[in-house]
Length: 105
Image (cartoon, rainbow, N blue to C red; front, side):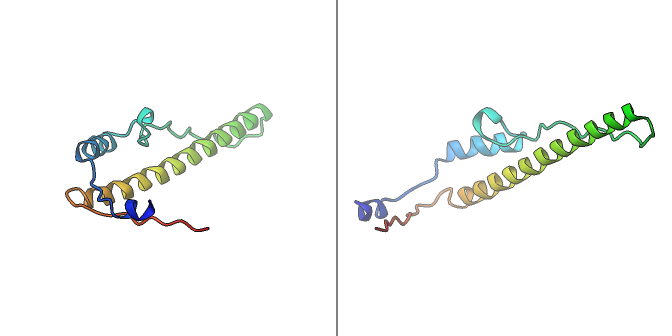
């Protein structure tokens, strides 16, 4: 059965590829698992002071900023991964290709 799968030709669904490329270029869509560009903005860091309440507020802002930065970095990674996969799919747009299948025991 694996030999049969290896002999099966594959093609890219161009209508679906065009739709996903359009969604990617328009900023993504979380519901369709296309990473978005709509992310929260980084908050402005308040200046350092001697007041304990302001120091606590500054600490909270720094923590929130760190979490948002992490989200930005993760989203950038997801967008670049998606771009790589879309570019490969676009390369094979009008071509027939075969995928090797194997199984180790």
